[in-house]
Length: 442
Image (cartoon, rainbow, N blue to C red; front, top):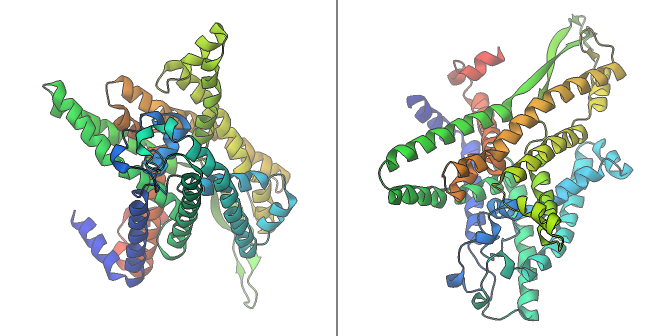
């Protein structure tokens, strides 16, 4: 505890880091404040529970926006259009030569890709905005909440505000990344997820207390189980497979000496695709659910099995799709051929493996082998909320026992802490020499 307090004091002593943290917290507070503002013409007092956005992709969107999606907020779309645009640009980079050329142009190329992503975000908002406004009733907004009706004035004003809200959220995220601490877009998603945590936990406590004796023990066991799942998520996010790399001897220009060969390693993450397989799989789980609307009784009976996100067959198919998308997304985000070429140009090689094509094949083989256990681990975390729900935990609280929400929170927290540690190491190096991080670096 004393070490933690000392670390907080050290953070506050560094003016640059202190200003970055204050700016980050201020921007996140602004984002949460804006998420509480309902669209003009919506009576907030009549907004009820978001029962229609609990599962599937709508549940993910609602979690990412901190409930703004289900409450008809001006930030209802949040950063989701920006995330969608980023995914589209990333996938298009595999087939569009212009985008591939930008990847090789360094900082200027990244700036151009970011500009393309911003314009694509606006276009996606033009599609998602009208779809959202047209389906407000289906996500749980009662008819009596529309004070101005569903006329053109309401539609046009809501469309402008939804677009403005998404652009503003995108701007906040980019400003946090540039002038704050951590990845701005990820932090806005995390703060939206955390915003739903207190109410979910309090509802669970209330439910346990009303159930009778043993409420305290049950809550304690649930908290212990929750921490165990967090630890498992940390291992999944941080686990890497190190590939040893050796660099040949090279002569230093301007010095009469030769630098000896050095050993290093390439870290390949156990879960290189992050939460994207869960998001892709969750989006496609709408398709089998549509079978329940079929006129054919046999097809309808099959579709019903996939409507319940806590059901057995839903989670079986969900898990298989996560494994498939884990391989797909890892293959498109880890360019082993480019890594092998860069290694060759840097006079580096993997001991026992020929440079070039053989090195790429070697890394691809290792990546394929570690992706399977990583994807299985990801499946276990993704379906664990369903297991928690079956154990009697309330639905909202069960969603924090795994899935997209928990993995995002863990990943963003680790990334932010690492950036803070980097500042501490630069300004208080002597004070952190005895830390475990320093010992591992040795």
